[in-house]
Length: 200
Image (cartoon, rainbow, N blue to C red; front, side, top):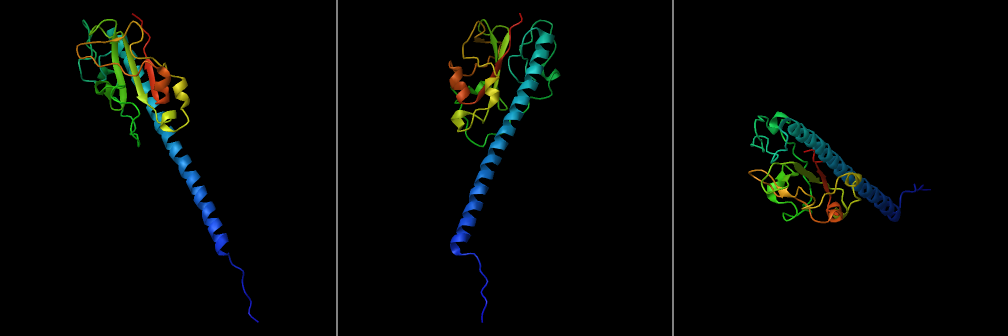
């Protein structure tokens, strides 16, 4: 008499393969989100480093630099001999986005982009001394990027274009300000931004 060992039926095998496929899909989605969060964490850490260098520059020179180019004149006034490069070796490069930016050149002009970060020196008069600055970066964890918004977007300053007394580009090589007149829209697109507090 022959003995038959019971194996998996075709249906059972298909169910197992299906379950493995679902588990792999969930793991890959979570891995992708984790990578996006990690890149956003790096961007935010870089912003803090740049802000510190900007404040040190202002402390030495009395104004902020015109641009984030560390070798440029950077709006030095009077007898200040400091250069932005004296306070930061180089502007860090933002991690590359795997998807296209949600911020068009009308929102962030090319002249305001520096290695993935956005910067504009600001004055109360056109091409005047840089008494304030606007600094930002685009985060990936944003609603219009089909992601849950980053908690960092609740902690930024959300300045709007042309807001306040210091709403003109400063210096001899001015860079345009960035963002829109609607901070909520900027947040939906992941614009994480800070503006200095004027201490004239």
